[in-house]
Image: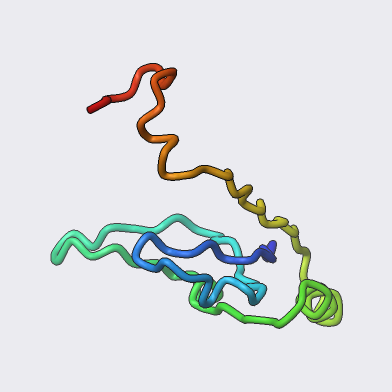
Amino acid sequence: MVARIFRPAKTAMQSGQAKTRRWCLEHEPETPRAIDPLMGWTSSTDMKAQIRLYFETKEDAIAYATRNGLAFTVRDPQEKTAKKMSYSDNFKFTRVGAWTH
């Protein structure tokens, strides 16, 4: 069983950076999810897929995984690059392919 260590991205419904600073350790699924024929719910027999642990630093998560003998992969987050733009850039004459007033 392989565990993933990553920092979760923010959801589309939030504008701030809440809950994106901590590192998450979760297990990759061993078996695929199955659809219940009667109700149509998706279910799984893999109980480790329900466990999600949070750590303050990446080193803490790696130490926990090595201490418990878990094979793991680390996915470093992609930092966003802020583009410097002013409001007047929306109305430039040289703006190509965009709607203008």
